[in-house]
Image (cartoon, rainbow, N blue to C red; front, top):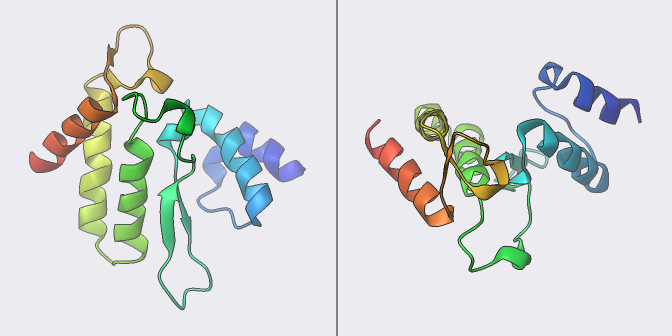
Length: 138
């Protein structure tokens, strides 16, 4: 499909992509490699706008790493930011969460899925604690 090619080649031209569920799953899996991991991608299903949306990370529940302190909580936090912005009309609160994620990443903290040399590896729990600290210091 031309759309999947363009998403991979020039993703910045898209703000939002509206698609059916299966094709959306394919595109989100492809797009995750642009940022390094599914653990970084929030998502929203807004429906027809007559009711609340559903906000969740692109990734699933990851049962293969459950209970191992390996999951990346960033997509959860960014999904909450989307909910604040698009459903609850609280853009300032959304921006606080987004800036907290940026601050923690800029400080070099990484979960295993996005770890690279020179960064500090943390687990899900510590990443969550760092994000809370960043929100509280905003």
